[in-house]
Image 1 (spheres, rainbow, N blue to C red):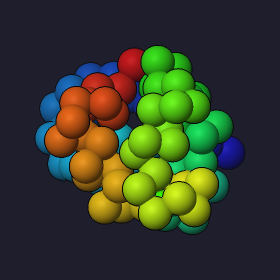
Image 2 (spheres, rainbow, N blue to C red; image 1 turned 180 degrees about the vertical axis):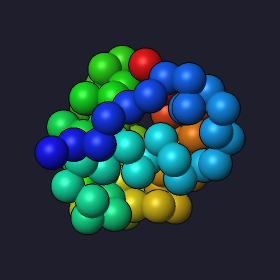
Image 3 (cartoon, rainbow, N blue to C red; image 1 turned 120 degrees about the horizontal axis):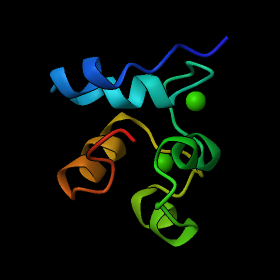
Length: 77
Ligand SMILES: [Ca+2]
Ligand SMILES: [Ca+2]
């Protein structure tokens, strides 16, 4: 059962890992394209591949941080 997303709580939290934790439905610590697009529908495959700097098809913690710094995974929807 996926964790519930609470918009008010999300707005109140500035912790960088929070949004990624919510998006990480299977809690394996990395985000797949499906997990990313479930939370950030605007992220295209091209953008995902751009963010996936090591090319393993997943976004790890550091890649998520970079994405957030670029404003790409900035806010929950
Ligand atoms: Ca995951
Ligand atoms: Ca990667």
